[in-house]
Image (cartoon, one colour):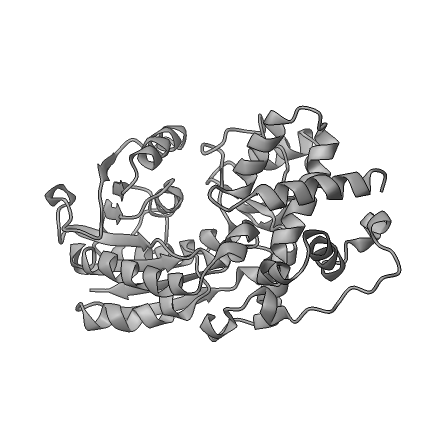
Amino acid sequence: MKYAAQYLQSAVAIVETYNGDIPLATFLKHYFSANKKFGSKDRKYITHLCYAYFRLGHAAKDRSVPDAIKNQLLLSDQASNWQELFDNSSIPEINLDTIFPFVSELSDEIDKNAFITNHFIQPDVFLRVRPGREEKMINALQQAGIGFHAMSKNTLAVSAGTKLDGVAQLNSDYVIQDYSSQQVAYFFKIIASVLGNPQLESRNPNPVTTISIWDCCAASGGKSILAKDIFGEVDITVSDIRESILQNLKKRFQQAEIFNYKSSICDLTKTIDSRLKIEDYDLVICDAPCTGSGTWARTPEQLYFFKQENIDRFQKLQQQIILNTIDAVKNGGYYLYITCSAFKKENEDQLAFIEANSTLQLVEQQLIKGYILHADTMFAALFKK
């Protein structure tokens, strides 16, 4: 590749400046904005090499930046694209456990080697097509000349970095939602089959016409939009500790044509706001703050800077949130606990805590192994009161 050595030199300079305080993608955006000499192709290749360094995880810390980048290019079978960077000198082999030194903390069901090597490649971007928009969305992608892979009728995968601006209506026709996150629909359908739903076959002779939902750690509202598409008529309450996030959610809900909802800024580590109507929900969705270890293939810098003691910190945080939200489920209602973590302490170990501190009973749990499909790895467990 022409200019490979110069790209490597620029990537090394960036990596040595970056300290992890902000997302790498944001840092790179600011860096290139301040350095106008780089064209679009330059930015693409330099960005690739920067990410290659952090994809080597903690193993990168024991090598020079150039050697770490070359190591990762070899491990991910991309060296042939960067032949100019390699000479006859040998590159030392790497033990996968040094890349991800938290293997002992992973959930038991995870294939350790497959999970670690999944960090070498940027995951796909997944589009969830909203009900009734399937034909429109496929036509729009084809007309724009965008290649895609249909994972299912409503799930399309495109390559990372694909420009989707102007392709159908974001949040109205489709939402950008990781494949594993979309699998939460399975649990919603379990609930709908019991409570009743006009869109789904139900065994309930007296179906609930409107499902009341509290999305207590709502973030950008992806799970709420999914719930709307599964349940139909919903009365949604969303809360988050961050006001800016709820402002973004408001805009997204408008695009998604969700208007019947309540919103509250709420710190769930403390006594919750009385406006949230304790013991009043058919479903509480607790998509808990977590290490995000199941998403580090997208943000490998988080793996690089992660410290093991943070696992216990997040476990305690989750338990505080659980204690302040489990009583909001009405009798016969459901509590859905979700993380985007691959760690047992944040996943399976929390189930015993929930059962010990409530009258909730486990219905089903699932470790969603996204690393098999270049998606995020997640965990979800459904309880019933």
